[in-house]
Image 1 (tube, rainbow, N blue to C red):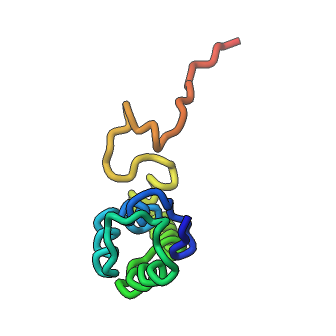
Image 2 (image 1 turned 60 degrees about the vertical axis):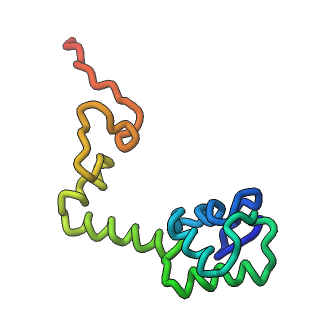
Length: 124
């Protein structure tokens, strides 16, 4: 498995699809990076030489694409900022509810988690 920017990418997939395993690089960006580096997009990642791997990482860095740690840190800081200024989106993040206007009466199980039964207590 080749290693690009401290991330192991799958060697048995074609280049653009294996680059998508790097956090912050989607399919469109991956295709652009492969095109700019002058490599064949139909090649498998395991057939890359060290020189070609370095060329790919240089293109990603020179294009100014934020990936992995830097991007994760930036996203976390943005969420903390929203929470600290007590805006609506920040409070939704804090409560673990959907942030972008989705309904919560039904659905929203991904954000809300497993169902919790809320019942009425019997009076003694």
